[in-house]
Length: 164
Image (cartoon, rainbow, N blue to C red; front, side):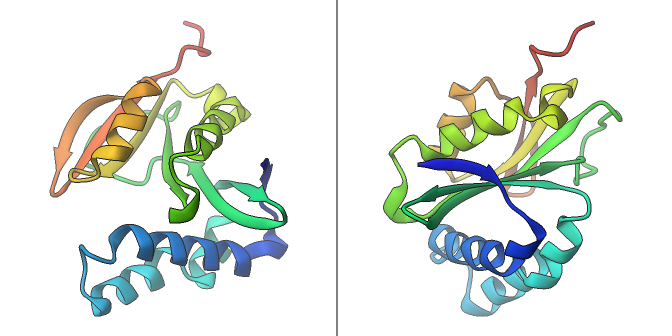
């Protein structure tokens, strides 16, 4: 498996991967109409055209096939107060057939080594409160619960690389 940064030329492939992994994760939570609405808002080519201007996306690839990704950048929620030194792990998904093989962990650890997250004071994320598998992964990577927001949990990792 190889982890690398996505390029703007791959927007279509990133959107396809993001859409597929999101449907696999939430197909039993939302109606088809709600899934379609959410995908258009946060997984479409139009969304990624904007995202590539401000976020970093790392891809996991195996035998030439994209199998997972992580997206990170500036905090996107306003439920808790963050500083200019804080960043957000916005999305981390692995296709169903590849889950449980350490790919999500490898993607997130690679993200931690990127200068944007490595130099952050705190790294935040939000996760669905019923996604226990993801919560367990995030806790194992040093994230802790900081707030509840609707059906999501906001977690924070204090950055050990940050000095001061």
